[in-house]
Amino acid sequence: MDLASFSHGKRKVRIGKVRRRPNGVSEFVEYVVGVQLEGATEASFTKGDNTMVVATDTVKNICYVVAKHDDMNSPEEYGLSLARKFLDEYSFVTGVRIEALEKPWSRAIVNGAEHVHGFLRGGQGEHVGYVEMRRQGSGISTSVEGRIEKLDVLKTTQSGWEKFYRDRYTVLPDTNERILATTVSVVWKLSQTQDVDYSSIYMTLLNCVYDGFFGDPKMGKYSPGVQNTQYLIAHRMMVLVPEISEVSMVLPNIHFLPCNIPAFVKNNIQFEDDVFIPTDEPQGEIRCTLKRPTSFRAKY
Image (cartoon, rainbow, N blue to C red):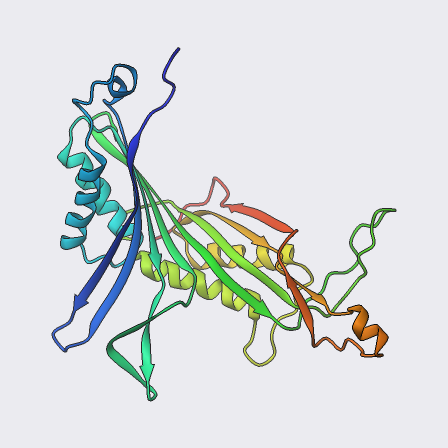
């Protein structure tokens, strides 16, 4: 039998990094890192020969060594530094895959003021960077993906679902008034990896989600369905960030069903778009991917 593919590495390496500024203000980030190494380890699988295997404990240690010297300004930048370290350190490693997930921490507000070294868990989803770096001839090929994960959003009005296809199995009524809630997942691919402000791109795309989903802070924005809202958000992302060559979104429906329980009916209690029953199983799942035309060339 042929060994079709093989790699090894370390997952769930947790790293906390404090950046201490001269003015006494601290910055803090936490990453969860995964590494997979490829190349020269076939004999460890087929013959039990571990001579060319970098121990996964060593892989973990290098994650921390790179964290010591890297500012960790974004998961993508850290991932690039880490992947390069493995290729520089081990000539027999032919490819590296890095996933770095940033856990959300936000600065604590105490009596209306930002605390200089206090932080709270939670906030604007998770920022994930995915880096692949491979030897290619005499050079190195690099690809970078960014992701927004686990971003929970909800709006209490300005959403509907109407005029959809009906047949004898359809029982869902039309509505132009409902809660719209989802957990946003976005993946974007970049057409270049150098001279890129990854943190700025992440914040731009995060704001695209907020603006496209919520709309104007006072007036909102009506959504005729998750499909249209999803497409408009992804389209705006590509308009605002020319470095993006492709963006994919997954938006599951997190349902809040009107509460018309028998006790309401028995006591003549009316549902007035006020009491709902949250449920996420089963859930609808809406996906789309936008790509630039092949004739497009980003201008930098």
